[in-house]
Length: 243
Image 1 (cartoon, rainbow, N blue to C red):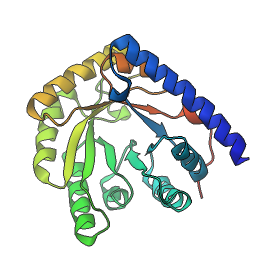
Image 2 (cartoon, one colour):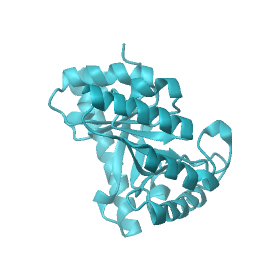
Image 3 (tube, rainbow, N blue to C red):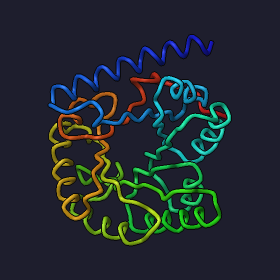
Image 4 (tube, helix red, strand yellow):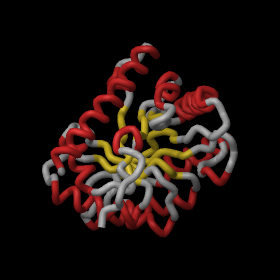
């Protein structure tokens, strides 16, 4: 069964890689400018381990409760794999202590209070030896000002970025967004690219733009995305959560 699943994932990964490479070529960009995040939410730890075997070492999750157990299980299955785990879903402050135990990066920071909680939890984890490096974070922005989709207004980015830059133990790496429904993805990603330019003027190391998923990664790459988050195109439409 695992051999069959490995073949399925290998074929899907090859197709996604071809799409990314073609989009980079069309945009006049180098392939290594764009990182692929394999979104393994609801899929078992074995799938994550197989993706790591295939070279997909940046893995993303949406829920802390599922992710913590899965990351631990994958570490047992592939103890030598250099996997980086990314939190891409909405995160409550009371989960900060838990998420810093497994995540290398949190892409969904959308408030000062969450940034403060992550900084405090990271410091504690560093002091106790649970972590050996600071936590990378991205600011999640809303491209249509709809609070239901998560993210802060573009006008609030500068203020939150300053807070993150001075709070300590977390490192601002850039912006993350989801293209809103009913809006041309190219228009949305263009808006995000301009916001990223403004952010880099004040924070030169905040260069990451996490944008683009299975259905719109080409448009995101055209507009400067440095990180695409792909789940369905890699793993399929449904999965069973790890125990």
